[in-house]
Image (cartoon, rainbow over all chains, first blue to last red; front, side, top):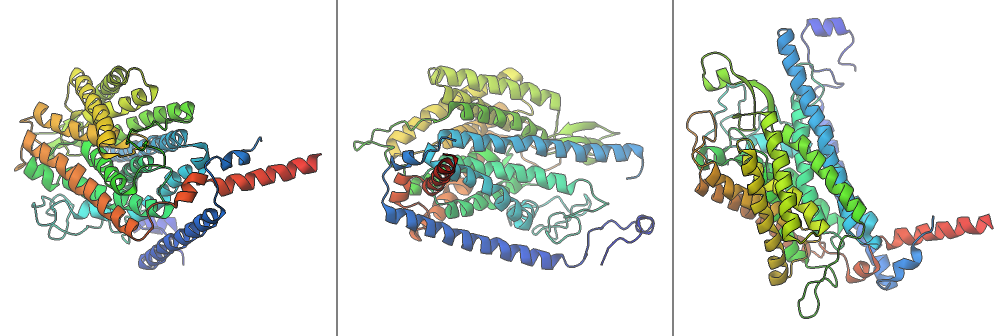
Length: 71
Length: 457
């Protein structure tokens, strides 16, 4: 539901908060915090997986040179 | 906004901070370029991602709780007494806890037609937070896990630096009131703490493979791309201009603040004591120049250290650059650079600390030196125009330096790194460090190139 439906009425009433769904800020905060924490868990697991893959291949310190592209 | 003059003043202040934020963005561009320039080819992309991802991580956590901490902890808690008693319009609810200014669920933390300042002020402080985390980022390149750095970046960027700012970089902070702490452009509250935090991590993280010979002699794993380093550091200098401006309140009437007769419009520093943008421009440039001169001299013309010393010079003089004479700023910068350079190599040899970009020296040691010198040079100056505040003094500044570098910097960095290390989450595996963090990316890119080339035959 729109917080502002008529600018004249809003400004005359000295309403200052204009973003949608005023009063549900706690919900957006909750969703954002859950996403943030999940990001850490997911990205850390992904990093571990990548590291394990590379570790198992036993590459030397100069092997990357054969992967330098020309383009 | 009551009238045209009031509206002009408010909109000017809003625009002023907005411009500083945009300018300060260049600091981060510079840090990214600088770090990539210092890292080896096989680690470029990981290095870049590490520094880039601190932007969203510190930003969202700064929204969640970082900004709240800044306003919540000015009196310790339980150390000082807040002057924000409601008469100033900044009620803190008994002295501990945030007001509506910083609550992430508050209507003022968004588009609000009744407020033009909170968002840009929040953003200006946020850019300081990025800088704090980015300082740490450079020191730990080529061997830290991304997941570990993400936690450490949030810790320094959205928790520890904002506690120290609340204590010592706020007109109501207990360190200002009780110790006479003065740190106008953040020698301590950004730089010393970040340098200390980085050192704490480095003690646990250890050096890169090959950094030290078997007899302990350090080897130089120097910058790999001098042009990225050069442009990067010039961008950091440029963004530092914005940082200096962002540390000021551009226009305020000190008359009612201090109980003066009549009005006194001026710019002030973060402590609401008067200075001028013009004056700090003198000092910014003179301390930059002093740093460059000293760095070139002490490093015998080493470009890496000369550039870094320009930065270290500004950082050393920053604590008192709202009041110093330009020549004082220049000479103070030179002292800081000399000490930082010597300390870097002494610590490297003695404790086998591998600080890949010299961040602990340039930010940490130079920041500490700047705080101590400020205590002597500005000895006796009032730390605030409000009543009941201690004057600036050497003891208070030395204690302040210990709090910044040691208590809120080194100690938390060391403890968090120890915990992460104990969980096996701090450092990448030996084999990955040898192969290079970008090995998989590079291999995939090479395969793509070969496939395209095959089709073109």
